[in-house]
Length: 361
Image (cartoon, rainbow, N blue to C red; front, side):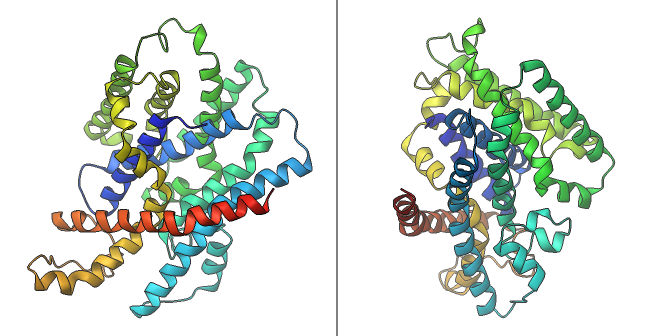
């Protein structure tokens, strides 16, 4: 099921995540909200598309294979490109355990920074998302049919555990939890519950009844902005900034997108515009290729220097990205990333997807 405003939000959050990673200021909170959005919306869309009223071994295997095939080809391609790039610049160090876990998309299960951020550091997202995909049929079979109250109790219990665990951790520990699959699946489960909420929107007297979604979109955007401002004002909220703080505003964004699908308001019309839809379509590639885009810029610096555009910044020495990046670096790397993402989407992702769809019939 395609909800264009959700795809537009994918594009918005993907751009903000890349901007933050290349050193642009002011996008930190939107990056955390964006990662939460991607996990939450995955559970939401899967729950709407695959109810799994009955589940047997064959249907589970088909589902698992189909969704694993959405992640592994792009992951293996970007991992191979990353290894080649590191070899070219003389920085390739093969760590057998880290590489094995990377290849099998299991590295986000490690609590070691040197493993879950090894090689293409952004691939942790696919590793954790794979776990969510593999759990979904079981969650849909056993969790989704539960009445609302038991669901609420389970969700509150999981949220409290997450809240308490994060409260006592330092930044290193919170980063490990940020990528850890059993923690991130809470976002995914919230998305599944939102699908049930949207199925019952007719019971609400306000949401979904307006002629268009302008008012609801403004409320959702205002709540997200208020949370950003609140976090910036109170540093004590830091332990929960990676996910917990964004559950409510992101959930409202998703519900509003569904409630006013094809009845978009002012903000929705921007989200369904062709540029944002195009960015949304290549958002996975955009996320996975940002490190390689940084390396391409690093290699281009001598050429840029000849035309007076070079800004000295050693991405390799700064672990590719850092807060001290000069302002113009962003406007070099972002278009490189977009170009690479478009090329990989058109020349690799789409052909591989068509081939896998044919073989699975």
